[in-house]
Image (cartoon, rainbow, N blue to C red; front, side, top):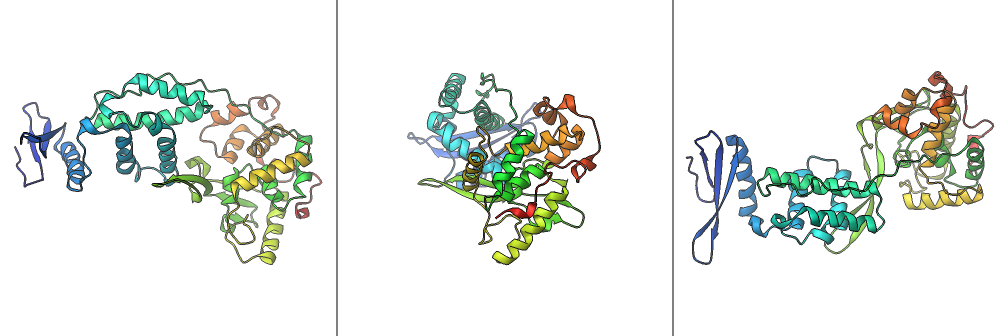
Length: 388
């Protein structure tokens, strides 16, 4: 046995070769000491568990396992296990799912009393509220990860989120403009001061957040290429009183989203015109697409502008993400290889690209990427400098 000083706990080795640690939490009403034990295969494992408990105990943050609620554990899990191990945007996404969907339903339940039926009911309630299958699955993933960590910490014997029946995801249907619809939309975009943002997404396949985060340092107009290295996210954070929305730059969706994209001739001309116009109307901004004040555009306002342009073009039922899908569809229709389209879109696997664009693949002819640079243009007859 290894004895330690006051409030440092005790560590020892068991006859079977595993290790244990114990701390004193105080005394009960009868004056008897209350202790908490930890177990592990190695001394380092129990030392880590002991240090974590001592840290909370010395700061008045430690709660007896019997008194820890699901909400309390989720807060601890976020701050201790996720804050330094995931991207800030991912952390905020987890926090939002917990505060908005999990805590209001099962946050009050003592962690040790959480059962699968309560989680199954929560999943059903969330689906009944109209949340999409993918959103419900994302919420379940967060809860399952937190409960898995609680099991590792020996706070639970079983992860109650395992074996839960989840809603079936509807197969994704790609919304893409037909060539005629695309031409109508481009013509409508000429009437808007932000129309070149949408046309740029049509001509590069960038996500709207990637386009809004694009900096001039990411663009090489001499070589007609750009690098995608960040994205602009709209996030929501919770404080003690309310939920607040804000914009933040972050790394792209996945590692494969960090990519180099060739510019068609029309897109290079569009950027040159944008740069010239920007230099005349505002102070220098590092962003390619910035307001006259040099600040990033607002996603919600752009969605409104996009809807207005759809009305002008007499188009209905399209989401702003259709710009990216239209780029991919035109590329495949014009014979660009599937692998090349995957790289241009930044998909993590070719299966994702193939699943999304199966309806286009039978007509592809497996030709060179050079078709993206003027030999096959999406914008025949379009003047990129014509935006007002």
